[in-house]
Length: 101
Image (cartoon, rainbow, N blue to C red; front, side, top):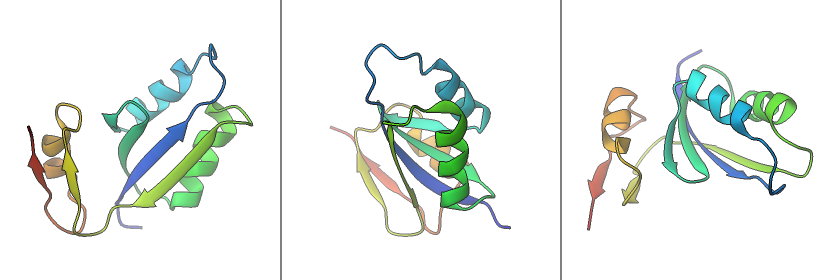
C-alpha cells in the first residue's frame, strides 16, 4: 500500500488523563503536530486502521478522533514550526504553501 498523509484531529476529553503514551505513539509514527490537538501522519494503513490503532491502545472511550487523508489543494496558516518542512518531506498529492503572519 502506498503511503498516505493523514490529518489526525483529537478531542481528548478527560482532563488530567495522561496522554503521554498517545503522544509518544504519534511521535513513533513520525507524526508532526500542526496544532495543539492536530497531527500529520504519513503511514501505509487506512484511516480506519489508524483510528482503530490509536483509539484502541492510547485513548479513552470518551475521547474523539477524526482522521482525513490529505490528498490535494491544502492550505494552512500559522501551523506549528516545521510543518512546511514536514510536508515537503512527506508530500501529499500536491505541494502546500504556507502564509505566516
